[in-house]
Image 1 (cartoon, helix red, strand yellow):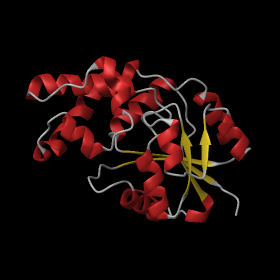
Image 2 (image 1 turned 90 degrees about the vertical axis):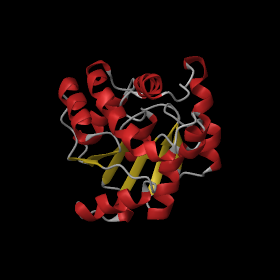
Image 3 (image 1 turned 180 degrees about the vertical axis):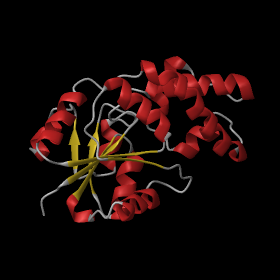
Amino acid sequence: MKKTTIIFDFDGTIADSIPFIFKAARELAKKYGFTPPPEAEIDSFKDKPPMEIIKRLKIPLYKVPFLIVEGQQLLHKYMKNVGYVKGMRKVLESLHTKGYTLGLLTSNSKENVEIFLHKQDLRVFDFVYSERSLFGKAPVLEKMMRKFNLKKEEVMYVGDEVRDVDACKKARVDVVSVTWGFSSKPILKEHEPNHIVDKPEELLKLFV
């Protein structure tokens, strides 16, 4: 069945925000006394699952929900400096013109996303769904599809992390992994998404 709805992850997939996320993490580390992620070693964190990163930074588990909320508050002041991943604007405009329903699914705050979209003056998304979950993305993805009455066979998800792939497999939604975000191409391949793309314009070959 033809895909009619494309759901995008936000951070790392559309927004070039990963450096700012690590900047916020370093600020929180300084404030709360856990191990800051070394700027020179950011890439070494990219293929680690969330629990391993938490353990490596010596963050008490009970603090994680509070740190996530405060981290998003810190990101709020950075959003005016966050731009699109190079080439993504053109891709989104083309998909919108072709009549696809476009959505955003993010664990970032809806307010932060809307600041970004307003600054970029790009009105191509039919909806933005924001929800944090410590139990993985699959329940959130399924909840979002119920809310907007989306049929899984008509949906394609586009994300940059292995947890996106894992969530989509659990929700039985096809997934495209992009290699310019958080997870590297080798580890994405290990999780076997339906498609892998190295450049934004390659998305158009899948959908247009």
